[in-house]
Length: 477
Ligand code: ADP
Image (cartoon, protein in one colour):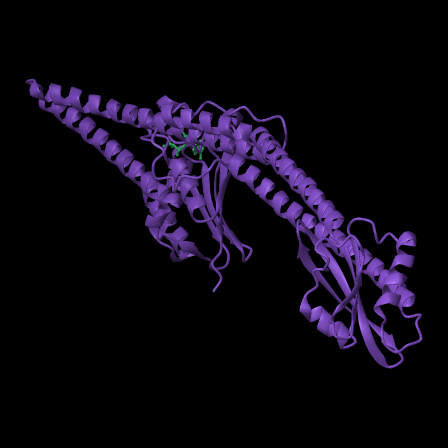
């Protein structure tokens, strides 16, 4: 089978789902990772800042002991030297420098790489203006965080203290953390891809099987086949059950169609053979009386055939509901007309009774409704011995109109009741054919009733008579 024309080709669902899972996890992991990294980095920097501030205050305390107004370079150097052993100033990565109010360096801790702290001019200017300022500055192979803090004596700014701390540890921590997060996210994404693919493959596996079997059935026309239902009673189980129901319907429809064709050809062949036999007879040199008898028989059979043909046509047409009219039909008038016809045809053989109450209107096709009523009345007359009683009654409760055709005839054996509305179904083939019926009359009744939104029911008492009731929805003005 060709699969062209099924829209643009797409990645299989299981890949799409797996990719979506992995994508979502990656985005979530990424967001969480960025949040963790920025939080950790900010906290570490805050700790560094606190340490820098503390250190700057200690240095300031140490170097402002002299009593003169300005900073004395010697005092400063001595102060720093005294501080050094106690503090970790000589430790690698921690730097101190003191400058005077002109920005000139007075003293530095011994470990400064190029003798100068890499401090941006802006923070020096800011500190000289009295504002403590932090900045990150690149130095050789690391970043250094520098605090510039003004040194005040009385109201005057006499110099600045620069303290710096290498961010090597912070950067290494953040870098390590970032690597861990990236590795974890990648692992999770791969696991989601594989897991998602595995899960969806497992979940969708039955669909592949279902598609395979359905395609096979479509290709071979074996509508009696069924798709094995998956064990779980889930969406796929429902889908399988639905497809199986559809298959059962298709199977029934096809079987009925085949039977219908076979029955129809069979029904046509019988009369054709009778006609042919009579034509053959007519070719012979027969006495006038026999020729007339042959002609009469052939004509009768032709009539039966044309009735069969029109019944078949009726059924075929009502199979396509669009061809049926939907107009208000005054049902009691229609019933009266059918009843007049019955009176004429019966010519006094039966006792006939017609009862109707208020006027009723239904929506539908007048000719087809008339045919439906006539079929019921005709059957009642046909299957009721002379002298029996046949009645037609019309009742309505305002919503539903019931047309009842009752007789005191031969009745229908209970085992046949469920099937009498089927096409070509006859209780007693020989007897029925003798009356000219092909078994389509009640099929037409049911089809017409259903076409008008109604139903037909039968009650029968073999030997005691039969009652057919057609219920139709009333058209309310
Ligand atoms: P047919 O053309 O043979 O009458 P129908 O479809 O009208 O076909 O009826 C099907 C069968 O139902 C008939 O063969 C007949 O045996 C039975 N049947 C229908 N109506 C009656 C009735 N009023 N009384 C007894 N049997 C009936």
